[in-house]
Amino acid sequence: MKNRSISFSPPDISELEIQEVCETLRSGWITTGPRVKEFENRLAEYFHTNKVVCLNSATASEELILRLLGIGEGDEVLVPAYTYTSSASAAIHVGAVVKFIDSQLDSCEMDYDAMEAAITEKTKAIIPVDLGGIVCDYDRIFEAAEDKKNLFTASNNIQNAIGRVAIVADCAHAMGASRHGKMAGEIADFSAFSFHAVKNLTTAEGGAATWRNIPGLDDQAVYHQFQLYSLHGQSKDALAKTQLGSWEYDIVGPWYKCNMTDIMGAIGLRQLERYPQLLTRRKEIIGKYDAVCDKLGVKHLVHYGEDFQSSGHLYLARVPGISCEQRNEIITQMAKRGIACNVHYKPLPMMTAYKKYGWDIKDFPNAYHYFEEEITLPLHTKLSDEDVEYVTANFEDVVKKYL
Image 1 (tube, one colour):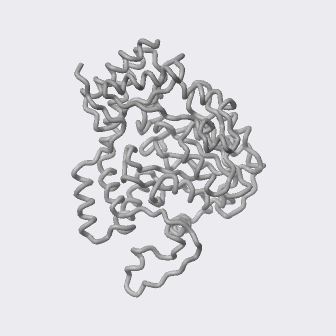
Image 2 (image 1 turned 30 degrees about the horizontal axis):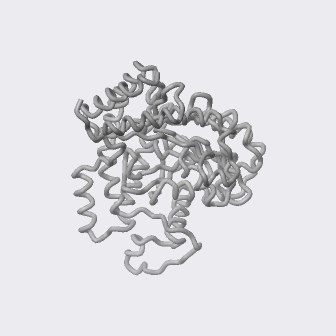
Image 3 (image 1 turned 135 degrees about the vertical axis):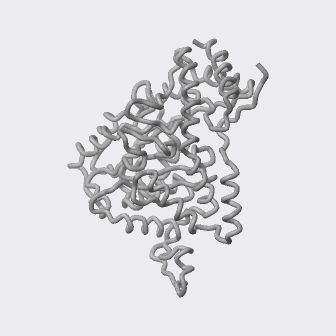
């Protein structure tokens, strides 16, 4: 079979996005403006929530959520050990202490019993991660938070409205995923999404925050506070200042700069228009990958079931019994055949930054075992049927030597 060149995760940009960006540039409005506002409204409809705020990244979205919740020094935030750094770094940015939780046995999902046991009177938030686009077991997470609510003391009005540890979902992978008939975005108390270049739906960079309907919470007030945090604490955004006689504004806090531009919003609008077809294509590819993995006895994430639907963001496969060195050999052999593979993820306690905080991977055996066997296959909507056949044939040929 002649070698192909299979990229790991290129963006799927059509003429629709290009045309919308060109129209945005011609409009003269390129920073936060009408297209971002329209994108926010359409996302809220998609997530089945009342409000969405678009920002420059999922990390900024998560950080501003934690700031909105009043989380800071002296507070603890529970984070899976098996995730990307942004899940934890946002908590560190606000001055909180991160407590890592090991994975379940033979799974990349957080150990919910260990999570519940880790909740103390200092715990203010849990950050579940919808890894690969599969929605976590939020029923169990909410149950744990409710069971420990007697330990919780609210420090601001939003915490008081929630009345327990806040569930702040890392939905960076989960755009379009659902569980029990609810969309990612309407399940957790607050949710952060990513529109980075490698995500299913991209705005080049970018992200969004949304929240479920919480009794006692004024959605417009929450949205306004996000706006203040994201635009230097400025009481009016650029669009509002264009109204006749509305030049004057106040600075109500010395805050941050992480807004989304209309150029990004333009890309997002057309991506969202195409998104149902993109999700359908991802599901088709996953079905073909599942078939070869099941044939080989290679474990993999289960993306679709009777009561849940993944966004199909990543295809995590696990070759049972291999070492890290063997896993790396497989990735190298695939690369020699023109196929870019990856690993999702190297657990955070293995990273230099988190070792400095005193974390040791030896305390997270399940996360480490999952990592050492894991290989992520390329999964994106630029793959043709011939490309998918090439990936599966070569994966089977390479991996069978290690089984």
